[in-house]
Length: 112
Length: 115
Image (cartoon, rainbow over all chains, first blue to last red; front, side, top):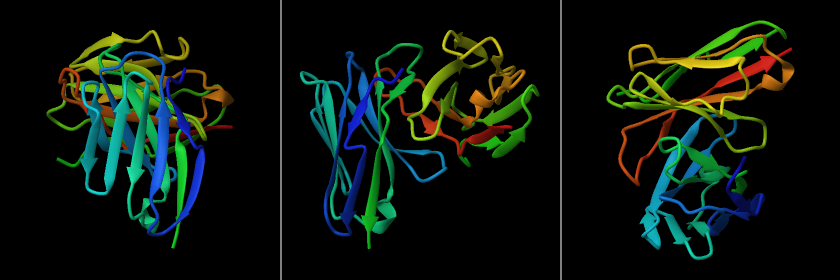
């Protein structure tokens, strides 16, 4: 079963614009991670935010976490055509080792 | 360090046949995970190993699925008597255990098509 729900399911923007994706989850977590997946390829780890952190930055990425609302957001600033991909949030609740529970993903298209 | 590798990258088989996939993790990683991803969905956890011990296998989809990691290095995932519903991408990930902040590194996946 999937824990997270991403919103929106699909997003289309112009190059240079910002893209915001949201993720909601159901149980308490150790951390939340965001991954990118290009069509038909493996997942690339983007950023991990721990449950006691509220915001984290990495290059053009900004992630926020609100554990009271069980939600997270991923902001990609100054988007590029190469950012076109599916983005998944995944939660680690400490069960089964550190298995990840993924949401359904947001499909981002950045038009040049 | 060349990352996580998986073989084969693609597999087409007929219903009822057995298939085996291999995953080679990042060399110093002691944890190895298997996930399945169907079209348009996020990955779904199947099983994981810490070194050679399989510590969680209750989420394997049926008793037709089995996994091994005999020497704590590479792992294999076998599906017996394949069904069309087994068609999916099978992803492997590896990590070094760190409490509360374990990052999993994924391989490119094996795409299975059952005819």
